Length: 234
Image (cartoon, rainbow, N blue to C red; front, side, top):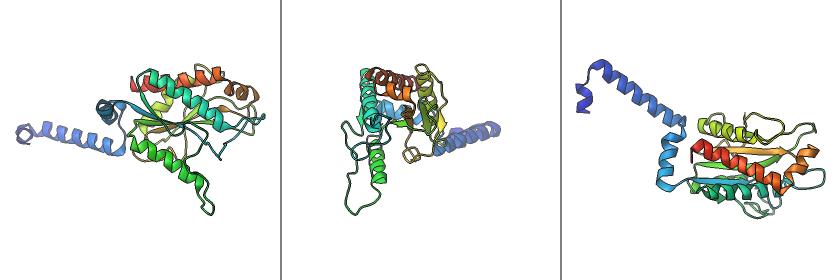
């Protein structure tokens, strides 16, 4: 403080303004991985939570053959876990089997919300640098195809991470897409950086066939892992 008082008034005002700007950025969550996230990684090592969407009684959507989204999500997520671990990243899975995180309770409503809340709580408890939620999409227009990564538009780190993953996914898919803002419960959590990957459209016959094959599932998982590692520079 004494040193600050001895500085010329103009330079002192500059330093105070700079400090206020940095503080405001931190409070707003507008920081890059070289800031607080880097500090967290230095303390604990990188931890990523991988969340295979749906599971158990919640099958999600399905393709025309009846293949359930929950099974494809899990297959991709397990491969993503393996690719990340091979690069030295600690991975926590929200599920590794066909189950959900909030089993059906007779007379109790809100099972879906409780399930999502349990996934979010697991991410918070592990102090993960990010949560990657894996899903498949469906549309009435059977021509729609392509993996899309969604982010919370109020989380700069989430947006940048989503764009990095999208860039890698576009290398392997026929129709390039753009990362997009999304209004999903799992994304709209303060203090948690999360992205949601819609790996493709089960309503598109050709893409549904690809999504059901281990080879394409592994290509998707590898692309997502490359996007994560590339963004955080691991």
